[in-house]
Image (cartoon, rainbow, N blue to C red; front, side, top):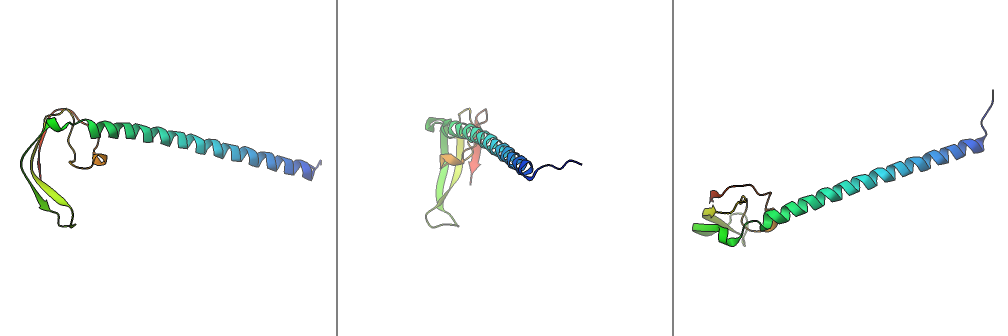
Length: 111
């Protein structure tokens, strides 16, 4: 029976580890690129949703601000918001809370 030399065995192990390390690096690189693409798509969608409704498209009636129960500096609006824009109004306030727009005018009661 022929026996492999220890040098050949360790060379094989080193090559195998290098190939495995390269495969792991390629996988991580691929996943990172996919995540970056998803982040950019979400950011573009978010920007559109945050800027789709203009101030002229909103009508407020019977709106009152009351201090919030959970904080000292926050206020909670109550009243009727009429949205004449083609995008859905999901929140009033910080634009980073907006979601993807929908179609048709909306009328909602806040509070």
